[in-house]
Image (cartoon, rainbow, N blue to C red; front, top):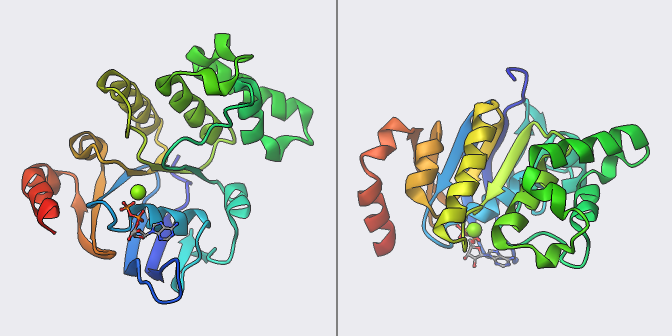
Length: 242
Ligand code: ADP
Ligand code: MG
């Protein structure tokens, strides 16, 4: 969809406490209909950059812009209304609710329009066939791979224009990692705008159009995928020595 807006970080400085600097003058462009991958060692600020984009953390200086408009002051719910959806790091299903209710929560913003609400839920059950027979199950009883698909469904249910996906394959068995990458491939083929952070460097770069690396909370390298594929081993060694 060529009309999808561009999301940008512009010289963002951020941290969690009064004096910590977790992101130091970080800039990134999340281009429409492309997969942008952010790489870097543990603790380099990848999840923090994603939180700045989703609104869970506010920049101290610098801005977040969507199609050129400053959205830095908007909270996560308001950003979701603008089409920015996030699949956060770690488990994010509600284990005591059914699969169906987890999905419904993702479509909460449509609740006043019963028809649209039901259509959105049904569309996700059709898209993620594995969930259909499980819809009355308690989400806490799902396998790791099924839970991850529920998280994808919940993230996608409002048809967001930008998807922010943090560590989708971490902690999954290799066969399930393949399932996650099949899903990411499908999202890419659909022309969605994606920011992906993943420890699985080879697979993530294989999917990327554009790559950024962070080191110590600063922009390190950036470029098109082709420029990265040859130097991944070196990069990883470098990170292990940072
Ligand atoms: P990455 O995702 O690249 O592993 P993070 O963005 O999670 O890195 O973390 C960057 C730095 O910010 C680390 O030093 C980490 O300890 C710190 N940090 C991350 N989340 C929090 C938090 N919720 N509260 C305080 N410090 C945090
Ligand atoms: Mg992280």
